[in-house]
Length: 297
Length: 281
Image (cartoon, rainbow over all chains, first blue to last red; front, side, top):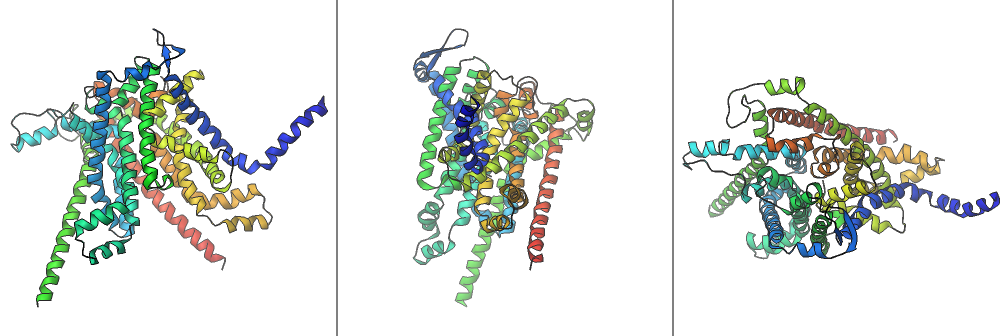
Protein backbone atom coordinates (compact mmCIF):
# COMPACT_ATOMS: atom_id res chain seq x y z
CA UNK A 1 0.00 0.00 0.00
CA UNK A 2 2.66 2.46 1.07
CA UNK A 3 4.86 1.29 -1.75
CA UNK A 4 2.05 1.93 -4.16
CA UNK A 5 1.66 5.44 -2.80
CA UNK A 6 5.33 6.19 -3.21
CA UNK A 7 5.17 4.93 -6.76
CA UNK A 8 2.41 7.34 -7.75
CA UNK A 9 3.98 10.24 -5.91
CA UNK A 10 7.48 9.79 -7.25
CA UNK A 11 7.04 11.10 -10.79
CA UNK A 12 4.89 13.97 -9.52
CA UNK A 13 7.59 15.06 -7.12
CA UNK A 14 10.27 14.93 -9.72
CA UNK A 15 8.11 17.02 -12.03
CA UNK A 16 7.73 19.64 -9.32
CA UNK A 17 11.40 19.54 -8.49
CA UNK A 18 12.40 19.87 -12.12
CA UNK A 19 10.08 22.80 -12.60
CA UNK A 20 10.43 24.40 -9.21
CA UNK A 21 11.80 27.73 -10.51
CA UNK A 22 8.99 28.08 -13.04
CA UNK A 23 6.22 26.91 -10.74
CA UNK A 24 7.34 29.07 -7.84
CA UNK A 25 7.61 32.24 -9.93
CA UNK A 26 5.00 31.98 -12.67
CA UNK A 27 2.68 29.72 -10.67
CA UNK A 28 1.02 32.24 -8.32
CA UNK A 29 0.36 34.81 -11.01
CA UNK A 30 -1.01 32.17 -13.39
CA UNK A 31 -3.41 30.86 -10.77
CA UNK A 32 -4.45 34.40 -9.85
CA UNK A 33 -5.15 35.43 -13.44
CA UNK A 34 -7.08 32.24 -14.14
CA UNK A 35 -9.27 32.48 -11.03
CA UNK A 36 -9.88 36.22 -10.92
CA UNK A 37 -9.79 37.23 -14.57
CA UNK A 38 -10.25 34.41 -17.06
CA UNK A 39 -12.84 32.21 -15.34
CA UNK A 40 -15.12 35.14 -14.40
CA UNK A 41 -15.00 36.45 -17.97
CA UNK A 42 -15.84 33.02 -19.35
CA UNK A 43 -18.70 32.90 -16.88
CA UNK A 44 -19.99 36.24 -18.19
CA UNK A 45 -19.96 34.81 -21.69
CA UNK A 46 -21.79 31.69 -20.48
CA UNK A 47 -24.42 33.58 -18.53
CA UNK A 48 -25.13 35.98 -21.38
CA UNK A 49 -26.77 33.05 -23.18
CA UNK A 50 -28.87 31.96 -20.17
CA UNK A 51 -32.35 33.04 -19.16
CA UNK A 52 -33.72 34.01 -15.77
CA UNK A 53 -36.88 33.37 -13.83
CA UNK A 54 -39.24 36.04 -12.49
CA UNK A 55 -37.26 36.37 -9.26
CA UNK A 56 -34.05 37.16 -11.08
CA UNK A 57 -32.49 33.75 -10.56
CA UNK A 58 -30.57 32.36 -13.46
CA UNK A 59 -32.14 29.49 -15.35
CA UNK A 60 -29.67 27.35 -17.17
CA UNK A 61 -31.44 27.15 -20.50
CA UNK A 62 -29.89 28.43 -23.68
CA UNK A 63 -31.31 31.59 -25.21
CA UNK A 64 -30.19 34.48 -27.38
CA UNK A 65 -32.90 36.76 -26.01
CA UNK A 66 -30.42 38.87 -24.04
CA UNK A 67 -28.73 39.90 -27.24
CA UNK A 68 -32.05 40.48 -28.98
CA UNK A 69 -33.10 42.74 -26.11
CA UNK A 70 -30.22 45.07 -26.95
CA UNK A 71 -31.81 45.94 -30.29
CA UNK A 72 -34.79 47.55 -28.57
CA UNK A 73 -34.80 51.26 -29.47
CA UNK A 74 -34.45 52.23 -25.80
CA UNK A 75 -31.20 50.32 -25.37
CA UNK A 76 -29.89 51.06 -28.84
CA UNK A 77 -30.20 54.73 -27.96
CA UNK A 78 -28.13 54.23 -24.80
CA UNK A 79 -25.46 52.28 -26.69
CA UNK A 80 -25.35 54.87 -29.46
CA UNK A 81 -25.08 57.74 -27.01
CA UNK A 82 -22.30 56.00 -25.07
CA UNK A 83 -20.32 55.45 -28.26
CA UNK A 84 -20.91 59.05 -29.31
CA UNK A 85 -19.78 60.59 -26.02
CA UNK A 86 -16.77 58.28 -25.76
CA UNK A 87 -15.82 59.11 -29.35
CA UNK A 88 -16.11 62.86 -28.78
CA UNK A 89 -14.09 62.58 -25.57
CA UNK A 90 -11.38 60.67 -27.41
CA UNK A 91 -11.20 63.17 -30.25
CA UNK A 92 -10.97 66.13 -27.86
CA UNK A 93 -8.34 64.28 -25.79
CA UNK A 94 -6.30 63.77 -28.96
CA UNK A 95 -6.70 67.34 -30.20
CA UNK A 96 -5.90 68.83 -26.79
CA UNK A 97 -3.39 66.22 -25.64
CA UNK A 98 -1.25 65.94 -28.76
CA UNK A 99 0.05 69.53 -28.75
CA UNK A 100 0.66 69.31 -24.99
CA UNK A 101 2.56 66.04 -25.39
CA UNK A 102 4.55 67.63 -28.22
CA UNK A 103 5.27 70.64 -26.05
CA UNK A 104 6.48 68.45 -23.17
CA UNK A 105 8.59 66.31 -25.51
CA UNK A 106 10.32 69.41 -26.88
CA UNK A 107 11.61 70.32 -23.41
CA UNK A 108 14.85 69.02 -21.85
CA UNK A 109 14.28 65.62 -20.24
CA UNK A 110 14.43 66.80 -16.63
CA UNK A 111 11.84 69.51 -17.19
CA UNK A 112 9.78 67.09 -19.27
CA UNK A 113 9.69 64.61 -16.40
CA UNK A 114 8.42 67.36 -14.09
CA UNK A 115 5.81 68.51 -16.60
CA UNK A 116 4.58 64.93 -17.01
CA UNK A 117 4.39 64.57 -13.24
CA UNK A 118 2.27 67.73 -13.22
CA UNK A 119 -0.13 66.08 -15.66
CA UNK A 120 -0.41 63.00 -13.46
CA UNK A 121 -0.82 64.60 -10.03
CA UNK A 122 -4.52 65.49 -10.44
CA UNK A 123 -5.17 61.91 -11.46
CA UNK A 124 -3.97 60.84 -8.05
CA UNK A 125 -6.58 62.94 -6.28
CA UNK A 126 -10.05 61.55 -5.85
CA UNK A 127 -11.69 61.74 -9.25
CA UNK A 128 -15.08 61.94 -7.55
CA UNK A 129 -14.18 65.12 -5.74
CA UNK A 130 -12.83 66.66 -8.93
CA UNK A 131 -16.11 65.83 -10.62
CA UNK A 132 -17.99 67.28 -7.70
CA UNK A 133 -16.02 70.52 -8.10
CA UNK A 134 -17.15 70.68 -11.72
CA UNK A 135 -20.66 69.89 -10.57
CA UNK A 136 -20.58 72.77 -8.09
CA UNK A 137 -19.06 75.13 -10.65
CA UNK A 138 -21.75 74.33 -13.18
CA UNK A 139 -24.81 74.72 -10.96
CA UNK A 140 -27.31 77.46 -11.86
CA UNK A 141 -26.16 79.47 -8.85
CA UNK A 142 -22.58 78.23 -9.08
CA UNK A 143 -19.44 80.19 -9.71
CA UNK A 144 -19.38 79.81 -13.49
CA UNK A 145 -22.81 81.38 -13.82
CA UNK A 146 -21.87 84.13 -11.38
CA UNK A 147 -18.88 84.96 -13.57
CA UNK A 148 -20.89 84.88 -16.80
CA UNK A 149 -23.62 87.06 -15.29
CA UNK A 150 -21.12 89.59 -13.94
CA UNK A 151 -19.38 89.79 -17.30
CA UNK A 152 -22.73 90.24 -18.97
CA UNK A 153 -22.22 87.28 -21.30
CA UNK A 154 -25.53 85.75 -20.23
CA UNK A 155 -28.55 87.48 -18.80
CA UNK A 156 -29.99 84.46 -17.03
CA UNK A 157 -28.25 81.62 -15.23
CA UNK A 158 -27.55 78.67 -17.50
CA UNK A 159 -28.02 75.15 -16.22
CA UNK A 160 -24.84 73.44 -17.31
CA UNK A 161 -25.65 70.23 -15.51
CA UNK A 162 -27.55 67.30 -16.90
CA UNK A 163 -26.26 67.93 -20.41
CA UNK A 164 -24.05 65.86 -22.66
CA UNK A 165 -21.55 68.71 -22.72
CA UNK A 166 -20.76 68.61 -19.04
CA UNK A 167 -20.53 64.82 -19.11
CA UNK A 168 -17.88 65.12 -21.82
CA UNK A 169 -16.16 67.75 -19.65
CA UNK A 170 -16.11 65.28 -16.79
CA UNK A 171 -14.80 62.47 -18.96
CA UNK A 172 -12.10 64.83 -20.22
CA UNK A 173 -10.87 65.70 -16.74
CA UNK A 174 -10.75 62.02 -15.93
CA UNK A 175 -9.08 60.87 -19.15
CA UNK A 176 -6.74 63.64 -20.33
CA UNK A 177 -3.67 62.40 -18.40
CA UNK A 178 -4.07 59.00 -20.05
CA UNK A 179 -3.96 60.54 -23.49
CA UNK A 180 -0.85 62.62 -22.82
CA UNK A 181 1.29 59.70 -21.58
CA UNK A 182 1.19 57.40 -24.65
CA UNK A 183 1.37 60.39 -26.99
CA UNK A 184 4.40 61.73 -25.16
CA UNK A 185 6.28 58.45 -25.27
CA UNK A 186 5.83 58.07 -29.03
CA UNK A 187 6.59 61.73 -29.81
CA UNK A 188 9.69 61.51 -27.64
CA UNK A 189 10.94 58.54 -29.66
CA UNK A 190 10.42 60.46 -32.89
CA UNK A 191 13.64 60.85 -34.86
CA UNK A 192 13.93 64.64 -35.26
CA UNK A 193 16.29 64.29 -38.23
CA UNK A 194 13.38 62.90 -40.26
CA UNK A 195 11.50 66.16 -39.70
CA UNK A 196 14.51 68.12 -40.89
CA UNK A 197 14.84 65.86 -43.90
CA UNK A 198 11.22 66.53 -44.80
CA UNK A 199 11.81 70.25 -44.43
CA UNK A 200 14.97 70.10 -46.54
CA UNK A 201 13.04 68.28 -49.22
CA UNK A 202 10.71 71.25 -49.45
CA UNK A 203 7.72 70.25 -47.35
CA UNK A 204 6.13 73.02 -45.32
CA UNK A 205 5.49 72.44 -41.59
CA UNK A 206 1.86 71.41 -42.12
CA UNK A 207 2.80 68.85 -44.75
CA UNK A 208 5.66 67.53 -42.61
CA UNK A 209 3.27 67.13 -39.72
CA UNK A 210 0.68 65.22 -41.73
CA UNK A 211 3.05 63.11 -43.82
CA UNK A 212 5.84 62.44 -41.32
CA UNK A 213 5.01 63.25 -37.70
CA UNK A 214 1.53 61.74 -37.54
CA UNK A 215 2.37 58.41 -39.21
CA UNK A 216 5.47 58.00 -37.03
CA UNK A 217 3.56 58.71 -33.83
CA UNK A 218 0.64 56.48 -34.79
CA UNK A 219 1.33 53.97 -31.98
CA UNK A 220 0.89 56.78 -29.46
CA UNK A 221 -2.27 58.00 -31.15
CA UNK A 222 -3.89 54.57 -31.22
CA UNK A 223 -2.63 53.92 -27.67
CA UNK A 224 -4.37 57.13 -26.62
CA UNK A 225 -7.57 56.03 -28.34
CA UNK A 226 -7.36 52.68 -26.56
CA UNK A 227 -6.77 54.21 -23.14
CA UNK A 228 -9.44 56.90 -23.49
CA UNK A 229 -12.24 55.48 -25.61
CA UNK A 230 -12.70 52.15 -23.81
CA UNK A 231 -12.66 53.40 -20.21
CA UNK A 232 -14.99 56.25 -21.22
CA UNK A 233 -17.57 53.64 -22.20
CA UNK A 234 -17.65 52.14 -18.73
CA UNK A 235 -17.23 55.12 -16.40
CA UNK A 236 -20.70 55.13 -14.97
CA UNK A 237 -20.00 57.53 -12.14
CA UNK A 238 -19.24 60.46 -14.46
CA UNK A 239 -22.73 60.71 -15.99
CA UNK A 240 -24.20 59.92 -12.57
CA UNK A 241 -22.41 62.84 -10.92
CA UNK A 242 -22.78 65.37 -13.71
CA UNK A 243 -25.73 64.14 -15.71
CA UNK A 244 -27.89 63.69 -12.64
CA UNK A 245 -29.18 60.36 -13.93
CA UNK A 246 -30.60 62.06 -17.01
CA UNK A 247 -27.71 61.02 -19.21
CA UNK A 248 -27.86 57.22 -19.29
CA UNK A 249 -24.77 55.46 -20.63
CA UNK A 250 -23.95 51.81 -21.12
CA UNK A 251 -21.85 51.63 -17.92
CA UNK A 252 -24.82 52.68 -15.80
CA UNK A 253 -27.07 50.31 -17.70
CA UNK A 254 -24.76 47.38 -16.93
CA UNK A 255 -24.39 48.42 -13.31
CA UNK A 256 -28.15 48.64 -12.86
CA UNK A 257 -28.62 45.09 -14.18
CA UNK A 258 -26.43 43.84 -11.36
CA UNK A 259 -27.08 46.17 -8.45
CA UNK A 260 -30.70 47.16 -9.05
CA UNK A 261 -32.88 45.06 -11.35
CA UNK A 262 -30.88 41.86 -10.91
CA UNK A 263 -30.97 40.85 -14.54
CA UNK A 264 -27.55 39.23 -14.71
CA UNK A 265 -27.93 37.62 -18.15
CA UNK A 266 -28.83 40.91 -19.84
CA UNK A 267 -26.07 42.76 -17.96
CA UNK A 268 -23.64 40.03 -19.03
CA UNK A 269 -24.63 40.37 -22.68
CA UNK A 270 -24.00 44.14 -22.49
CA UNK A 271 -20.62 43.40 -20.91
CA UNK A 272 -19.84 41.04 -23.79
CA UNK A 273 -20.65 43.90 -26.18
CA UNK A 274 -18.11 46.09 -24.36
CA UNK A 275 -15.54 43.28 -24.47
CA UNK A 276 -16.07 42.87 -28.22
CA UNK A 277 -15.56 46.60 -28.77
CA UNK A 278 -12.41 46.38 -26.64
CA UNK A 279 -11.07 43.42 -28.60
CA UNK A 280 -11.71 45.20 -31.88
CA UNK A 281 -9.81 48.26 -30.66
CA UNK A 282 -6.94 46.11 -29.42
CA UNK A 283 -6.76 44.34 -32.75
CA UNK A 284 -6.46 47.71 -34.45
CA UNK A 285 -3.78 48.66 -31.96
CA UNK A 286 -1.67 45.59 -32.69
CA UNK A 287 -1.67 46.63 -36.37
CA UNK A 288 0.34 49.75 -35.53
CA UNK A 289 2.07 49.12 -32.22
CA UNK A 290 3.09 46.50 -29.72
CA UNK A 291 1.00 45.91 -26.62
CA UNK A 292 4.19 45.63 -24.58
CA UNK A 293 5.00 49.23 -25.37
CA UNK A 294 1.62 50.57 -24.35
CA UNK A 295 2.44 53.24 -21.81
CA UNK A 296 0.32 52.48 -18.80
CA UNK A 297 1.75 54.73 -16.17
CA UNK B 1 21.65 93.60 -43.99
CA UNK B 2 18.85 91.74 -45.69
CA UNK B 3 20.09 88.45 -44.29
CA UNK B 4 20.16 89.91 -40.81
CA UNK B 5 16.63 91.13 -41.20
CA UNK B 6 15.46 87.73 -42.33
CA UNK B 7 17.24 86.13 -39.42
CA UNK B 8 15.63 88.43 -36.91
CA UNK B 9 12.28 87.81 -38.54
CA UNK B 10 12.79 84.08 -38.15
CA UNK B 11 13.91 84.58 -34.59
CA UNK B 12 10.87 86.67 -33.86
CA UNK B 13 8.63 84.05 -35.39
CA UNK B 14 10.29 81.37 -33.30
CA UNK B 15 9.90 83.43 -30.17
CA UNK B 16 6.24 84.07 -30.91
CA UNK B 17 5.71 80.36 -31.52
CA UNK B 18 7.40 79.61 -28.20
CA UNK B 19 5.17 82.09 -26.43
CA UNK B 20 2.01 80.71 -28.02
CA UNK B 21 2.90 77.16 -27.03
CA UNK B 22 3.67 78.27 -23.47
CA UNK B 23 0.27 79.92 -23.21
CA UNK B 24 -1.37 76.83 -24.68
CA UNK B 25 0.35 74.51 -22.19
CA UNK B 26 -0.59 76.83 -19.37
CA UNK B 27 -4.25 76.78 -20.40
CA UNK B 28 -4.35 72.98 -20.56
CA UNK B 29 -2.72 72.69 -17.16
CA UNK B 30 -5.21 75.23 -15.88
CA UNK B 31 -8.08 73.11 -17.18
CA UNK B 32 -6.63 70.06 -15.44
CA UNK B 33 -6.09 71.89 -12.17
CA UNK B 34 -9.25 74.02 -11.93
CA UNK B 35 -11.30 71.30 -10.19
CA UNK B 36 -8.54 70.83 -7.61
CA UNK B 37 -8.13 74.54 -7.00
CA UNK B 38 -11.90 74.85 -6.60
CA UNK B 39 -11.87 71.96 -4.15
CA UNK B 40 -9.16 73.62 -2.04
CA UNK B 41 -11.01 76.95 -2.06
CA UNK B 42 -14.31 75.32 -1.12
CA UNK B 43 -12.65 73.50 1.75
CA UNK B 44 -12.15 76.91 3.37
CA UNK B 45 -15.50 78.36 2.32
CA UNK B 46 -17.81 79.37 5.14
CA UNK B 47 -20.93 78.19 3.31
CA UNK B 48 -22.37 74.73 3.28
CA UNK B 49 -23.61 74.50 -0.30
CA UNK B 50 -20.65 76.23 -1.91
CA UNK B 51 -22.69 78.36 -4.27
CA UNK B 52 -20.56 81.40 -3.57
CA UNK B 53 -17.66 82.51 -1.44
CA UNK B 54 -18.83 83.48 2.01
CA UNK B 55 -15.63 84.04 3.93
CA UNK B 56 -12.74 82.01 5.25
CA UNK B 57 -13.22 79.24 7.77
CA UNK B 58 -11.40 76.18 9.05
CA UNK B 59 -14.64 74.79 10.45
CA UNK B 60 -14.70 71.83 8.04
CA UNK B 61 -11.22 70.76 9.02
CA UNK B 62 -12.18 70.86 12.69
CA UNK B 63 -15.38 68.94 12.04
CA UNK B 64 -13.48 66.41 9.99
CA UNK B 65 -11.48 65.29 13.01
CA UNK B 66 -14.05 65.76 15.74
CA UNK B 67 -17.40 65.04 14.24
CA UNK B 68 -17.19 62.97 11.11
CA UNK B 69 -16.99 59.34 10.12
CA UNK B 70 -15.11 60.20 6.92
CA UNK B 71 -11.76 59.50 8.55
CA UNK B 72 -13.00 55.99 9.31
CA UNK B 73 -13.83 55.38 5.63
CA UNK B 74 -10.40 56.71 4.71
CA UNK B 75 -8.98 54.19 7.17
CA UNK B 76 -10.73 51.34 5.33
CA UNK B 77 -9.44 52.74 2.02
CA UNK B 78 -5.91 52.75 3.41
CA UNK B 79 -6.12 49.19 4.76
CA UNK B 80 -7.44 47.92 1.42
CA UNK B 81 -4.84 49.88 -0.56
CA UNK B 82 -1.91 48.75 1.59
CA UNK B 83 -2.98 45.10 1.57
CA UNK B 84 -3.69 45.10 -2.18
CA UNK B 85 -0.36 46.82 -2.84
CA UNK B 86 1.59 44.25 -0.80
CA UNK B 87 -0.13 41.34 -2.53
CA UNK B 88 0.23 42.75 -6.02
CA UNK B 89 3.87 43.73 -5.54
CA UNK B 90 4.79 40.24 -4.29
CA UNK B 91 2.83 38.29 -6.90
CA UNK B 92 3.59 40.78 -9.66
CA UNK B 93 7.34 40.91 -9.06
CA UNK B 94 7.79 37.16 -8.71
CA UNK B 95 5.42 36.60 -11.63
CA UNK B 96 7.32 39.05 -13.83
CA UNK B 97 10.52 37.11 -13.07
CA UNK B 98 8.83 33.89 -14.14
CA UNK B 99 7.38 35.45 -17.28
CA UNK B 100 10.67 36.99 -18.38
CA UNK B 101 13.07 34.20 -17.41
CA UNK B 102 11.22 30.99 -18.17
CA UNK B 103 9.33 29.35 -20.96
CA UNK B 104 6.22 27.36 -20.09
CA UNK B 105 3.09 26.12 -21.77
CA UNK B 106 0.56 28.77 -20.79
CA UNK B 107 3.03 31.65 -20.95
CA UNK B 108 1.46 33.53 -23.84
CA UNK B 109 -2.05 33.03 -22.41
CA UNK B 110 -1.01 34.41 -19.03
CA UNK B 111 0.95 37.33 -20.52
CA UNK B 112 -1.97 38.31 -22.70
CA UNK B 113 -4.48 37.93 -19.88
CA UNK B 114 -2.56 40.62 -18.00
CA UNK B 115 -3.85 43.18 -20.47
CA UNK B 116 -7.47 42.29 -19.81
CA UNK B 117 -7.82 44.18 -16.52
CA UNK B 118 -5.95 47.13 -18.04
CA UNK B 119 -7.98 47.57 -21.21
CA UNK B 120 -11.40 46.10 -20.48
CA UNK B 121 -13.75 48.73 -19.01
CA UNK B 122 -13.66 48.56 -15.24
CA UNK B 123 -17.39 47.96 -15.00
CA UNK B 124 -16.91 44.60 -16.77
CA UNK B 125 -14.20 43.59 -14.31
CA UNK B 126 -16.42 44.75 -11.46
CA UNK B 127 -19.40 42.61 -12.43
CA UNK B 128 -17.20 39.60 -13.22
CA UNK B 129 -15.63 39.74 -9.75
CA UNK B 130 -19.03 40.26 -8.13
CA UNK B 131 -20.37 37.16 -9.89
CA UNK B 132 -17.27 35.16 -8.90
CA UNK B 133 -17.73 35.98 -5.23
CA UNK B 134 -21.48 35.36 -5.30
CA UNK B 135 -21.05 31.98 -6.96
CA UNK B 136 -18.28 30.97 -4.57
CA UNK B 137 -20.65 32.09 -1.79
CA UNK B 138 -17.95 34.34 -0.47
CA UNK B 139 -19.37 37.17 1.68
CA UNK B 140 -18.60 40.63 0.33
CA UNK B 141 -16.33 42.69 2.55
CA UNK B 142 -12.76 43.62 3.23
CA UNK B 143 -11.34 40.37 1.79
CA UNK B 144 -13.23 40.63 -1.49
CA UNK B 145 -12.17 44.28 -1.77
CA UNK B 146 -8.51 43.42 -1.26
CA UNK B 147 -8.64 40.50 -3.71
CA UNK B 148 -10.37 42.64 -6.35
CA UNK B 149 -7.99 45.56 -5.96
CA UNK B 150 -5.00 43.23 -6.18
CA UNK B 151 -6.48 41.82 -9.38
CA UNK B 152 -6.40 45.15 -11.20
CA UNK B 153 -3.07 46.22 -9.65
CA UNK B 154 -1.06 43.06 -10.44
CA UNK B 155 -0.92 43.63 -14.23
CA UNK B 156 0.50 47.14 -13.78
CA UNK B 157 3.17 45.83 -11.42
CA UNK B 158 4.08 43.02 -13.83
CA UNK B 159 4.40 45.40 -16.77
CA UNK B 160 6.60 47.79 -14.81
CA UNK B 161 8.73 44.96 -13.40
CA UNK B 162 9.01 43.07 -16.69
CA UNK B 163 10.75 46.04 -18.26
CA UNK B 164 13.16 46.34 -15.35
CA UNK B 165 13.94 42.62 -15.26
CA UNK B 166 14.50 42.41 -19.00
CA UNK B 167 17.00 45.26 -18.71
CA UNK B 168 18.88 43.60 -15.85
CA UNK B 169 22.42 42.31 -16.19
CA UNK B 170 22.20 38.52 -15.81
CA UNK B 171 25.93 38.16 -15.15
CA UNK B 172 25.56 39.60 -11.64
CA UNK B 173 23.23 36.77 -10.68
CA UNK B 174 25.46 34.23 -12.37
CA UNK B 175 28.39 35.58 -10.39
CA UNK B 176 26.40 35.10 -7.18
CA UNK B 177 25.60 31.49 -8.11
CA UNK B 178 29.22 30.84 -9.08
CA UNK B 179 30.28 32.09 -5.68
CA UNK B 180 28.13 29.41 -4.07
CA UNK B 181 24.82 31.10 -3.34
CA UNK B 182 21.74 29.08 -4.19
CA UNK B 183 18.79 30.42 -6.17
CA UNK B 184 16.91 31.60 -3.10
CA UNK B 185 19.85 33.45 -1.57
CA UNK B 186 20.68 34.96 -4.95
CA UNK B 187 17.10 36.16 -5.28
CA UNK B 188 17.02 37.83 -1.87
CA UNK B 189 20.57 39.21 -1.81
CA UNK B 190 21.14 40.11 -5.45
CA UNK B 191 18.01 40.19 -7.63
CA UNK B 192 15.63 41.81 -5.14
CA UNK B 193 17.90 44.72 -4.14
CA UNK B 194 18.47 45.50 -7.81
CA UNK B 195 14.72 45.59 -8.38
CA UNK B 196 13.90 47.92 -5.47
CA UNK B 197 13.39 51.07 -7.62
CA UNK B 198 10.98 49.20 -9.91
CA UNK B 199 9.19 47.67 -6.94
CA UNK B 200 8.74 51.13 -5.47
CA UNK B 201 7.19 52.56 -8.60
CA UNK B 202 4.99 49.47 -8.92
CA UNK B 203 3.88 49.87 -5.32
CA UNK B 204 3.21 53.56 -5.82
CA UNK B 205 1.15 52.82 -8.92
CA UNK B 206 -0.86 50.08 -7.16
CA UNK B 207 -1.51 52.22 -4.13
CA UNK B 208 -2.78 55.18 -6.14
CA UNK B 209 -4.96 52.97 -8.35
CA UNK B 210 -6.44 51.26 -5.33
CA UNK B 211 -7.08 54.33 -3.22
CA UNK B 212 -8.97 56.09 -6.02
CA UNK B 213 -10.99 53.15 -7.31
CA UNK B 214 -14.74 53.67 -7.39
CA UNK B 215 -16.13 51.46 -10.13
CA UNK B 216 -14.92 48.03 -9.05
CA UNK B 217 -15.17 48.78 -5.32
CA UNK B 218 -18.78 49.78 -5.71
CA UNK B 219 -19.60 46.21 -6.78
CA UNK B 220 -17.57 44.21 -4.29
CA UNK B 221 -17.56 46.44 -1.20
CA UNK B 222 -20.50 44.94 0.64
CA UNK B 223 -21.96 46.73 3.64
CA UNK B 224 -18.92 46.62 5.93
CA UNK B 225 -16.03 47.59 3.68
CA UNK B 226 -17.11 50.97 2.37
CA UNK B 227 -14.05 52.83 1.20
CA UNK B 228 -13.90 56.60 0.97
CA UNK B 229 -14.64 56.82 -2.79
CA UNK B 230 -17.59 54.42 -2.46
CA UNK B 231 -18.91 56.52 0.40
CA UNK B 232 -18.45 59.75 -1.57
CA UNK B 233 -20.34 58.26 -4.51
CA UNK B 234 -23.23 57.30 -2.26
CA UNK B 235 -23.25 60.80 -0.75
CA UNK B 236 -23.51 62.52 -4.12
CA UNK B 237 -27.28 62.23 -4.37
CA UNK B 238 -27.84 64.00 -1.07
CA UNK B 239 -25.00 66.46 -1.62
CA UNK B 240 -21.43 66.17 -0.42
CA UNK B 241 -20.61 67.62 2.96
CA UNK B 242 -17.86 70.26 2.92
CA UNK B 243 -15.74 67.96 5.08
CA UNK B 244 -15.11 65.91 1.94
CA UNK B 245 -13.37 68.90 0.35
CA UNK B 246 -11.29 69.34 3.50
CA UNK B 247 -10.34 65.67 3.64
CA UNK B 248 -9.34 65.43 -0.03
CA UNK B 249 -7.37 68.66 0.21
CA UNK B 250 -5.39 67.06 3.02
CA UNK B 251 -4.96 63.92 0.89
CA UNK B 252 -3.54 65.95 -1.99
CA UNK B 253 -1.11 67.50 0.45
CA UNK B 254 -0.02 64.08 1.72
CA UNK B 255 0.30 62.88 -1.85
CA UNK B 256 2.55 65.78 -2.82
CA UNK B 257 4.75 65.13 0.19
CA UNK B 258 4.79 61.44 -0.77
CA UNK B 259 5.92 62.26 -4.31
CA UNK B 260 8.70 64.49 -3.00
CA UNK B 261 9.85 61.79 -0.56
CA UNK B 262 9.69 59.16 -3.31
CA UNK B 263 11.82 61.33 -5.60
CA UNK B 264 14.34 61.97 -2.84
CA UNK B 265 14.57 58.25 -2.00
CA UNK B 266 14.98 57.28 -5.65
CA UNK B 267 17.75 59.85 -6.04
CA UNK B 268 19.40 58.59 -2.86
CA UNK B 269 19.20 54.95 -4.01
CA UNK B 270 20.74 55.88 -7.34
CA UNK B 271 23.54 57.73 -5.60
CA UNK B 272 24.16 54.86 -3.20
CA UNK B 273 24.18 52.33 -6.03
CA UNK B 274 26.76 54.45 -7.84
CA UNK B 275 29.02 54.80 -4.81
CA UNK B 276 28.61 51.08 -4.11
CA UNK B 277 29.81 50.23 -7.58
CA UNK B 278 32.65 52.73 -7.33
CA UNK B 279 33.82 51.23 -4.04
CA UNK B 280 34.58 47.98 -5.84
CA UNK B 281 37.19 49.56 -8.04
